[in-house]
Image 1: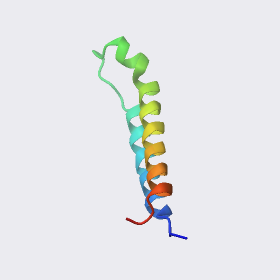
Image 2 (image 1 turned 120 degrees about the horizontal axis):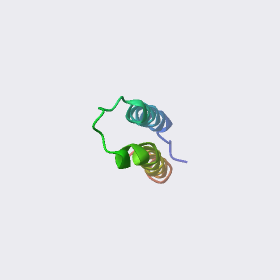
Image 3 (image 1 turned 90 degrees about the vertical axis):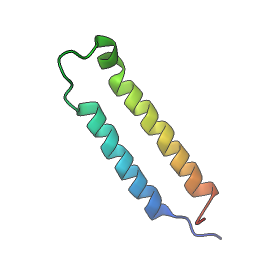
Image 4 (image 1 turned 90 degrees about the horizontal axis):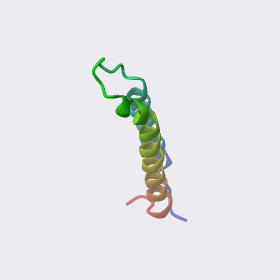
Length: 65
C-alpha cells in the first residue's frame, strides 16, 4: 500500500481555509458594488470547496509523486 501525503493535504487545507476566511471578512471600501457584496461569501465558499475536493482527490489517487 502506498503512503499518502496527509500532512501535505492538511497544510493545504489550513492555508486554503485561512485565505477563504480572510476573503470573506476583509473590510471592503464603501464604493464596492452591491452585486459584489451579495456574491462575495458564496463565491468564496464555492472556490474553497472545489479546491479542497481537488486536493483530496490528488492526495487519494496520486500518493507521493
